[in-house]
Image (cartoon, rainbow, N blue to C red; front, side):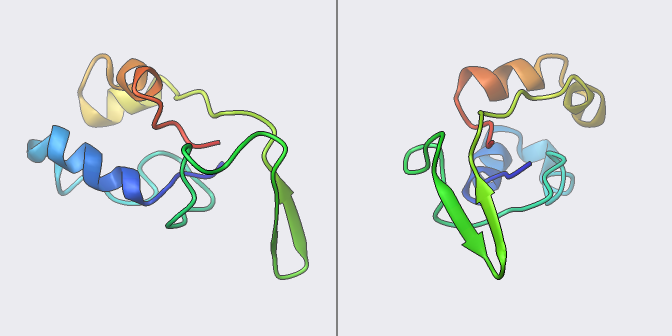
Length: 87
């Protein structure tokens, strides 16, 4: 799972009371980068990190566990509805 680092600032602004909690890897990502968001990365894109090739195959589906961790009952739904899901 990949999650754009830029999205953390968005969530901190939405939930200032959770600012201490909103840090990588809150969203369960294995990789987090800057400059690679849903606006400029597409299904089928292939990236190389070292000798590893990574292909974007699908958007990420936010997990219900985010609701439990953040104590926001619809956090996963908000994440999906605003398109800040990663892949």
